[in-house]
Image (cartoon, rainbow, N blue to C red):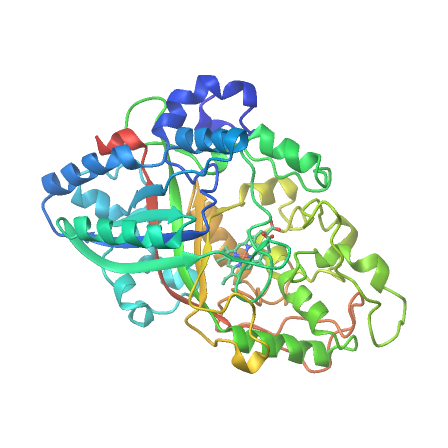
Length: 471
Ligand code: HEM
């Protein structure tokens, strides 16, 4: 049996029984999303001595949702429709581990120093501008998730009460899934989110293969993308993972106005296709790079033949790359999904790009009607957003690389490509080279610097230890 933290291929169904001991030790939500519609994130600063906190965690550990439990619940759901129990996870920061007296010898610097120290590298807002709770020294993140939001609230209240016996709860962030009319998950700007993920199980890859294909983009990933051998627990089958948490506020009104302005500035005069060039997908998730054939008439008219964002019966496509769009005529190089996953179109090439993937585990936050407001003026300009989260094996080489070297970089993949218009942060950004017309390379006469609609309000780097670490 390969060491999971070194294995670069998905877990085979036939391997699962032999991996049971490793899966019993591993926290859930790392190799498979917990999939619940509501989540509460409780951030804690421990104040009580190490012995009391350790005793608390030891008592809590049997309640954690392991990967083994996730797989069992999934099987039961398939067989009898039984829903899973509440999801529970516990993650610790470098400072939290120190409080517990754990050795930090096996941990990398960016984790030990925490997200506050990475502000200059990521162009994040200065720490005094973060939400008050995130400015404090955070030791742990307790994650609860369930499909029943009222039950979840009560469980969260009870846990917060118990946590007050060992520390201060410095921040609580509640997330609620949003869906469009097709039932797909969306974020607050209205776009399908969470579609493209690394898949760690043979069974998941096979399902993609029969549902849209994997020949252009293979979502298969080895557990080595997210797992490390647990430095806190000597057992050969104890694995952990690093978790990046960021609270990202979304100015929906500002974004939607900018989308409209961009659409108006382009000869296509179509805000849908302007937005698709910002994100790389239409709101319904259709990749803009695939919408080309119907819309690229040489010298064509001022409007686009509609519809350009039809979804195939297999749902939101993910089997695509940018090979047929090497000049960025349809999906610009700066579009959010091309910046964060160039799918082989970066100077590093496909194998390199694949090592930068993130197992995204975010959920939207903030009060908003279930259906989008009827006009842009009524849309929120803040206090809604994304509780971004992702698991990685290497924070510096994956999350920080993507945000710092690709997203925030005017010159990735080429000079003056501009920053990611959704999440790019760069005080000296240059306007992105938007085209006058979709499918053509003629740039807009008046450049548009599309940015500033996502504001980071705080975050931290965490580690998900193997369950036996808690004792
Ligand atoms: C409020 C902030 C954000 C919004 C609104 C947003 C929105 C989206 C949307 C709509 C998609 C397309 C759906 C999909 O392919 O799954 C997407 C994909 C993605 N996003 Fe974000 N995102 C945000 C933050 C971030 C951050 C902070 C990162 C990492 C630094 C990130 C990395 C990715 C990646 C890797 C993909 C998949 C790209 C692919 O494989 O094609 N996103 N995001």
